[in-house]
Length: 388
View (cartoon, rainbow, N blue to C red):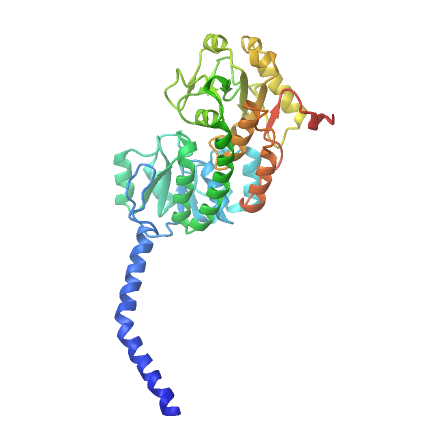
């Protein structure tokens, strides 16, 4: 019996020895697959092939909102960074404080240029990342990309600004692959897509002549000039998706630009939406966020609608006026803003959507640092908020 047991043992040993070269070769192929990514070829949002070893951390980022994106898929996003853009207003001062309270290292991380600044190869190299995550439509020139890659720093373009509606999921997937959290990115993308599908199915049945015209004034009340507006791309894509007609799209060919007040008056939109935040307090513009109560936000929204020209709009006279935190657009959690826009533009069709419940779920299931407080308001209080 002992001899009978020993024979298969010897055979098994010989089989393993014979297979060892294949195992070693397989390990080499696994390493190659790890370098290329699970679904080769790995490309960025400029469709540039990326030849990098994964995970490609630490990173530098040129937009504070990418910190939020990383927070959706990693419990300690700051640990992934060797430098960041420091553009606190893009994530809101209150949210920045919450991140520093949770991850004190953020306050001392080296600062690199944000996507609105002139790009600095020297600042990125000083932070010593393995990869520099930069914004599509801005960021380094081709010559600067060559400098960085020549110095051993991979450059990865993503997009949460120019065309975020179509590029956000791909950008988050790419971030997931860069940091070894692709499964988590897939889970969030599915959560977002499932909610988008609910909206798209209903919007498909809306006739073209039943789609309200919408004027979204970005940074509303920021100085005497009127009027900041999305054009082709950016939040204008969301307005179209939820069944509205963005009046800026016809004259602004870039993602963002300015509208002439006379044009706004002439178009006389059905719905007026302001965006704002704490950065507009000194200018007397629309303010919203965790440091403001509902009454304060609504009063500031009323003030921006009382300006010359804006007060005469049909949307204002009919009370179809709403305000949204600017930090909620171009955001990794854009599904919250999308549901709010849908409710405002087609209140009868989307009365069952609950953006706050969606944000609560994102806080609970995904975000390393939850959002607290209020990030949108209406000029006319809803019955639920007034106790009616």
